[in-house]
Image (spheres, rainbow, N blue to C red):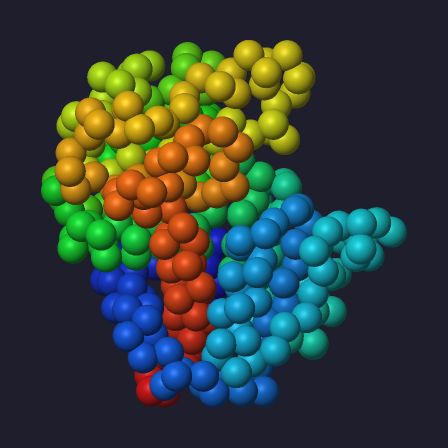
Length: 307
């Protein structure tokens, strides 16, 4: 039995196979509509979510399975003080696979230690978000035709952004990757991400504060919102929340085939007018999340060869 807790739990070859499977599902979704018949997915979301939770549910329903779970800690026995270990032990009798989101780093890993079924980390605090990373990789591959030899700009909240940390760790395994890290001083990428992923793999990178200066060299621009829920005080959030806003004027500085990604939700860091630019890939990216999670569910349940 395997879990997906960290983006590096799958090898590069396994990620490639999973993305290929997602591509086959996109090309012929009806072929997979009954593969998970009589299988159940439990969505244990201790933290609010729209895209991740609903895309997991859509993925399982698209595969012919069913879904059970909760959408907030308040509506679970966590409100009564039940531990994660006890919750997952019980859920293992009810479901065949689990997707868990939790505000505390390491909670899904803790659940995996006591689970009788595969556990998928659907985001743990400011730590990791591996299924979002798989979605990002699929979007980049479908837009650029490769995951190698790319200059990736990551902009906004690089300190608390779990999607950023996971994407850096994953892309650092591919040759020819270069990172441009764009953020205010207060929201720089944590040193542990650089020391664990970028430095050991000899990945060229630079840190910048100007989005405009970075735009001409980027193949991918990964925008993020400044996350109010990660700040300890409102004053710092208000001071930093409008640091970067992507506009048509800034898009004019970019390559004609650059792609703009965003894990969503956005607040105001991408102007609505940018939605009409063919380089805007963030809604397509959200759609890709369903197919990636379908492929992941099939893989972890050992059903990926059924079709």
